[in-house]
Image 1 (tube, one colour):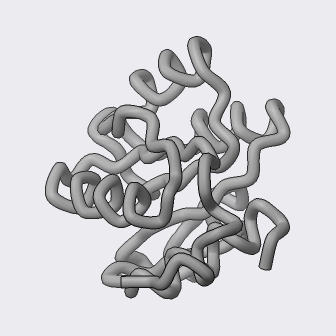
Image 2: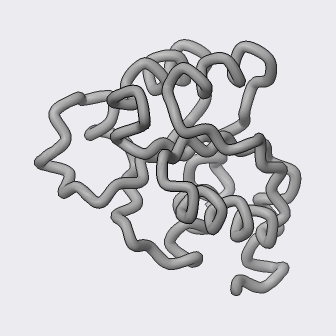
Length: 128
């Protein structure tokens, strides 16, 4: 677990989790809570993510490449339009990701460590 000083820059940031594996989403939600983040309810599909974003704007997002209803590309497109930074969490090698919106952004390769998650989030919110 990260220390308070390591995660001070993450306190209160609102995070969207788009992840179709419930165990992974739960672990992310728990870890982000430990970091002091405000975690929006995790979603498992692009449609759910887009609906959630229509109600509440996240400060940052973590997207799995593949969601229950297909690739997370529509979510990435909306995040770019809204100016919300995001990272992709995936078990795929970057070269295997065809879509530039999902390939040419910060990547967290599954499985990743809490410190990698923390460092990625700090870079996304410009506090690294």
